[in-house]
Length: 79
Image 1 (spheres, one colour):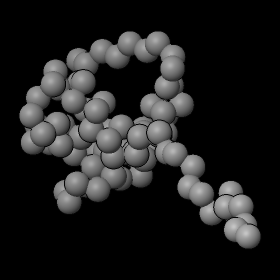
Image 2 (cartoon, one colour):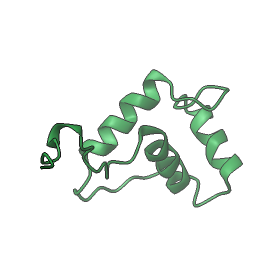
Image 3 (tube, one colour):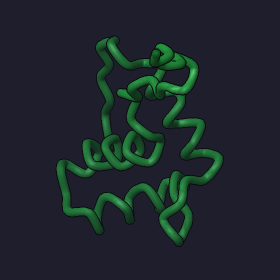
Image 4 (tube, helix red, strand yellow):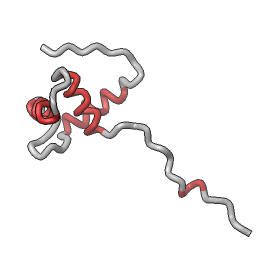
């Protein structure tokens, strides 16, 4: 007789985007849909990514704030 599967060992689906993709998406929106290099450069210039392309503390904070806004209507202006 087989035992039922242990639900504790089943991974829940993760539909939440990772912080890096949130930052790159936001930077892409600010850049007007530029290429990957332009988007990464913009995120680095704003201090959201370090020189190796990893999130900085500021990038993590921005990603969390943007994820908290998920489902709400927001308008951003780039000066």
